[in-house]
Length: 246
Image 1 (tube, helix red, strand yellow):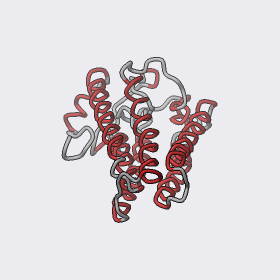
Image 2 (cartoon, rainbow, N blue to C red):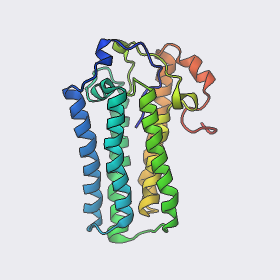
Image 3 (cartoon, rainbow, N blue to C red):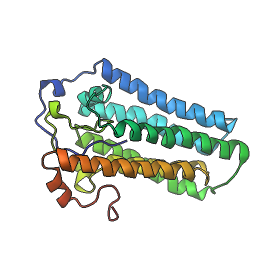
Image 4 (cartoon, rainbow, N blue to C red):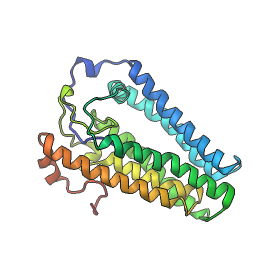
C-alpha cells in the first residue's frame, strides 16, 4: 500500500544505519501475520481448502511478502523501521480512512469471496479471468516494490515527516503518477475477485477502491498545502492515481 510522494534526501546517520530495530521486526511480523489472517478468513468463510485458484493467489502473496521485505532491507532497512513505528502526528482523517481500507479491502473482501466460491456460489468468473487477474496482481507487486525503493518516506500513514527532512520524490514511478503505491493497491484489489473467480467480490473491491481514491485525494491535498515543492511537482506530473485518467 502507498505513502506521500517525496524525493530522496541526504539521509542522516539514523536513516542510513544498516540494521533492523525492534519496530522493524514488528512490522515484518505484522505484515506476514496479516496475510495469514486473510488466508484464514478466506478459507474459513469458504468452508474448505480445495480451491486451486485461491491457492494461486495466496502462493504469490507468500512469495512476494518475504521477497519484498528482503529487497527493502537491502535497499533501505531504516524504512522498515519507520514503517513499524507509531506516529503521533498522523493526519486525523487517515486514522479512519486507512484502517477502513484494510478492513474492507483485505478482510471483508476475503470473507465475501470465500463465502461466494466456497459455500453459496452466488456468482462465477471463468478461468480466463485468472489470466487477467494474475498480471494485475503481479504488476501491482512490482510497482509497489519499485515505489518503496524510490521513496524513503513510504510510511503507512499520512504525515509530513519533518524530523526526516521530508522532501518531494520525483524518481522511479513518481515520474509517471504521484501516488504509485495506491495504484499498486488498486491493482491488487481488482485482481482478487478475478483470480479467485467471484463477481460478487467486486462489491467490497469497489468500496475499497473508493476509499483509496478518497485517501489519494486527501493526501494529495495535504501535500500540496504542507510539503515544500509538491505543488510544483503536481504541475509536472499531472496524474494522481490512474495514468491518463486522474
